[in-house]
Amino acid sequence: MQMSVLQKIHQWDVDMFLGVASHLHERIVRTAYFASKTGDGWLYPVIPFAILWLGFGDEWFLLTCASAFAIERLLYFAAKNSFKRRRPGNIVPGYSSHIIASDEFSFPSGHTSAAFLMVTLINIEFGVLATPIYVWALIVGISRIILGVHFPTDIMVGSLMGTGIALATYTYLIF
Image (tube, rainbow, N blue to C red; front, side, top):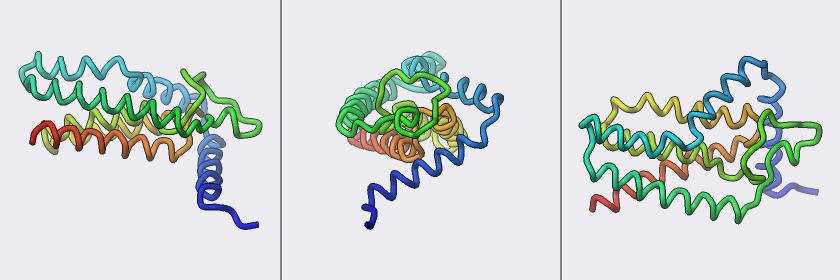
């Protein structure tokens, strides 16, 4: 019997996930936990206000961030509750996640989506000098795989979703 495309993607996801999970050390998990916490969401309202307060941004940047996050959260919740993909700890036999996620579904990664949304907005506003903070967003995404609450495609789609929403919001609010 031939596997469907979705079955092949799912099998690739599980294989990649288990490949990462089988090479983890306690120090890596602790570091991933810290990185994941930086993407929990508490920073996202603080960053635009801090940029404004420091005199680097303006009210338009604040409005763009607020609008983009409102759109991102709506699309994220709609996607997560439509696809209802269960987390690795719930579907990979013999595997237990390192943390307990706030909900039962994994697709797409909200941590990753929000992180890429924020860094894309900052990069658009401040140019290539802000590009290195994409590394932080990538680390947030990878930390979610290491902690066992997301598959690789959850992270990929989350990063594309956050980036796309940031670009679309910035484009349509400006013009």
